[in-house]
Length: 205
Image (cartoon, rainbow, N blue to C red):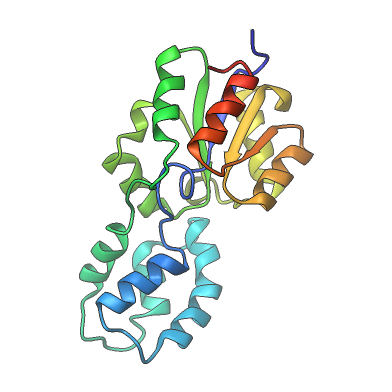
């Protein structure tokens, strides 16, 4: 019988594509033929992304500060939709494993991810993640971002779990390392087959 009671999932890069990373930004800006001010956007994004993902500013404020500080030939509403539409199922998604663990009914499962409140809400709804997850430690809700150790501590303290009971899955090594430093069993996601093998070894499947 596994000693683990809880699995906390990153979302972008594990279940879905990233919400608004550099690849998604390039895709959207190419489609909008937005070329001239990209360097300035990226400079502003580097400043505003952290408060946006911590819930200190909302989606509209983020766009006004990074992009719509001057008139554009496209609307803010069309840009918001294009950003939201970048969220799709990851090509080698761990979603089937999420569903399989949920079907067993033996584990608490939740998300622990960096995402703005608005994009996270869209992703939870669009991909039906609330059917499988029962706790939501999203940076946009809790005001903390990985790899800050405080977000992992918040997770196990709110859940009233010992860190050693928790499996944490993320595609970024730094995030996994910080979780492991606090006692969680960190797994870096490199693909569904490797994760399934890890789950078998941990007696989760």
